[in-house]
Length: 355
Image (cartoon, rainbow, N blue to C red; front, top):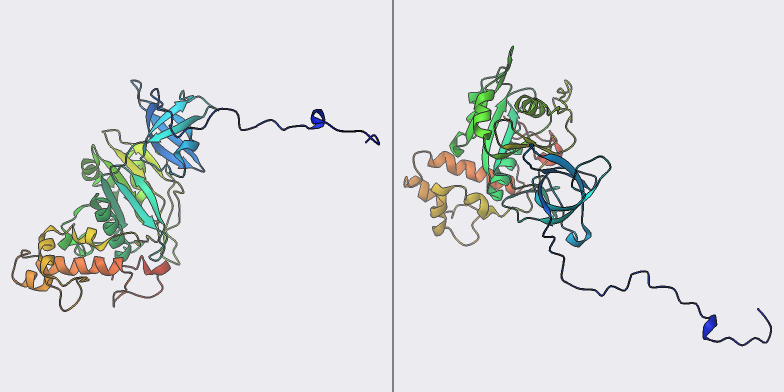
């Protein structure tokens, strides 16, 4: 610095405004030229989207636009894309809009976690896959899936695999009072026996397959979609539990029409977000009997009016069994244990084995 020099405004340096001079506005661009697509895979912040066309469609990799804020993108979402939607290698589009979801399958980490996580969007059928043996069916986990289906407004379908190892009627009797639609598959020399019945129920629908590891879910998907190439595994001979094979969720187009969404094997399914009234709403034959219940009734107490409703025959001949099933589901929702459930079989007792 030169001694005695006087400074003026020419010596002051002003940093340029790096945020730009464009005035801020709350109006978001309309993106009228956005391309509609369906999200089929979400992996580490990037979404693989199917853009349908006359040639059968092509896949586009996309990132969520900043203008969407914290809105998450999940498999099954119907979205709008801008940018490079050609699907060529090393190209990236932007998801600028997520259409309103018709259904949402949700879960929480456990029964005390207030944060719900969206698993899948826009599915109309929940296919609960369980093996009749090897590994043993876990009734409490199946019940949790059913509660989640009722809460989401999805039709539940029970799919029992490995029917060649045990009489499936013994397992089906557990859920017979619910009137669930059910299919049974078994392993044969020529492939999976009973696969046509599964195809019939999946045709034209968007179905989510859920189940714990080792039940044959990926094997079923590979049979339904020959080029799916989902990883398959075996059951641990020591623990009796399946090994995790599929590690990502993926939506696949069925050859005869419809979609299936395969999910990784699940050992726990929190239901902290579910309103018990949503579960009761799935029991049309019992719902009207609730009108006489005391306020705040949990439907598992002496004052519950459902007992008198069933005793009067107003719920039909299957009323007692249906009421017992309802109470079992509500106990599952409250995180209560059943007396005959063995301790310590799985994390948080959410997937205890069928006794």
